[in-house]
Structure formats: structure tokens, C-alpha cells
Length: 118
Image (tube, rainbow, N blue to C red; front, side, top):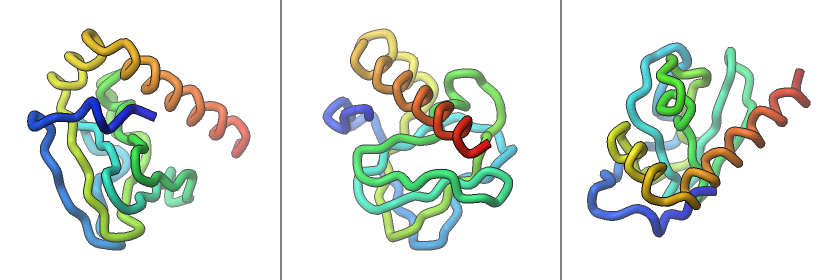
């Protein structure tokens, strides 16, 4: 998982209440999220596929490939999320190899998990 220690004052915090949508499948995505506190559920076509807790990331795929969101994200509990925009994401990938590697590991794990579900 990407290290929350890579975050700084350039990264904005947002809060969501339990049950509140964070983004919807098919919508454009210009930011990714790091869970600072609480839990988030990802759904694909309405089916739960993953729960993400503190230190976890989501929304990164839209920044990697520029495609619409592949899942819906909703808060399971009240949660605090750090947002990382496209410019900041690109800077972290270029200047922090560990961040880039962690994002790739998350993507690979999600792909393997989806293969298992199918």
C-alpha cells in the first residue's frame, strides 16, 4: 500500500459519512484517494469486490489510464480520505519509486482478485 507518510500539505483531506458515495462507476476520475481513517467499499456493477481500510488506496486506475471509474466507492464508516490529484500523482510516481511500486502492487492484487471472482 502507498505510505501515508508520502502525503503532505499538498494533499487535501475530505470526510465522508457511512453510506455516502465517494464516486460512481463510469464517472470521470481526476483524483485518487488514500484512506486515512475509516473503511471504504468498492463495488463493480453493484457487487461488492473489496473493502479498504487505513493506509489503503483507491481511484488510482483512472489516473493511470485516463479511463472512467471502473467501480463505485462508498464509505462503510465515517472516514477521512486524502485526495491526490493527477499532477501530484504524476510527481509522486516520478520522484518516489516506492510509491509507484506500491501502486503497481495494488493494481496487480486487484487484477488477481477480479480473476478469482470471475
